Image 1 (spheres, protein in one colour):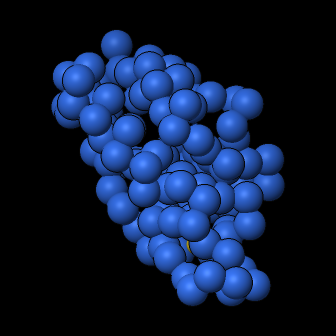
Image 2 (tube, rainbow, N blue to C red):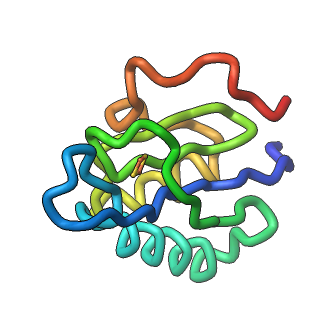
Length: 112
Ligand code: FES
C-alpha cells in the first residue's frame, strides 16, 4: 500500500495580459488548484497529498503546469475537468495520468 505523501505544485503565476510568455493563471490554473484541493479534502486524502500554489516553474507554454513531487511527474494543459482523474489515479492509487504528462518534462528535479 502506498503511504508516501505527495506534494502537488500548481503554478498560479500571473503576468500582465499580452505578455509573450503567457502564464498559468491566465489559462485557469487557480481554478484547477481549487478543484484538486477540494477533491483531496472530499475524498479524505489529506494524509496522502498536499496541494500547493507555486510561482512560475519555467515551463510557461502549455499551462496550467502541475508538478507532483517526489514523483517528478509533470502535467501540462490541465483543466478543471481533469482534476478528479489526477486525484483518483495519481494521488490516491499512485498511478500518474499518462495522457496529461508533459513529454519533455524536466529531468533530475527530484526530491528523492
Ligand atoms: S507561468 Fe506557470 S510555469 Fe511559468
